[in-house]
Length: 368
Image (cartoon, rainbow, N blue to C red; front, side):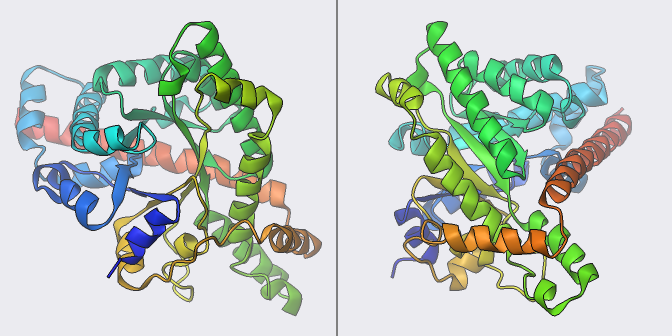
């Protein structure tokens, strides 16, 4: 029997786990899910590392060593997280080679406090890339206004990028434009553009959470009937943007020189509403050349009882647009929602980053 996850992969969706910890690396668990869950990559963020380090499993010896050297909390976080990512990159090296660089990727994020600092983001992206020192690492850069310039610069340096915190279709157009400009810059600088890969992480569940709250406040029968529909509509239209924005003569010239399309990635695919199917944001978002990064709970739900269609996106563009139009007609501002979600997304990662620093600071003190 082929598992639903294997079927998902066969239908063109790369399954990336949205989690990483030292315990997962050292126990063999990470290697195991490559074989048994069709997982072909890993994404991390400050919240994931804050959770892993607060549990402390496996970090004691390195923390003691860093404490003995007098490392600051920020230096310790840098050393610890880059080691985890480098080790995970090694575990995925076979997948990376087999997929010719499309998969086998491990992402690490620039410090969220740099989200509105283009130069600071570029500098740290280069620093993280050099420290991890693995070809299959991806540097995560948020899709803020300042992030767009950083994406172009970092891609232009020949570094693969995972663009994160994308909520709106308008911003997604800008992200693709920033990527294409970066590939042109890399080509002009003499980099091998066939080695550059990128994904654009389009956040899903948070859109429903915020829009549903507003539809509930509107309270009409027609508004309530739209609940739990906007996130899928938005994500499906994002795939249409992907198809359209890479179907240009400008891109065709780069593709002929070996450039790779920036693949759309569906992120935040764990369902927040207990009334919804726990596989909704996976099985309803199936199309070729897509990545879905899922928390383990969602991944296991799909493995256990997911019903995977061949394609659940490209025949739904008209329906998806109709949903967003109806949400707007109900009085819910799409622009206001997506702007708020971007701001909140950055703020939440800053909070997690500060928790991470506090956890490490306490561990360093305890080790002295």
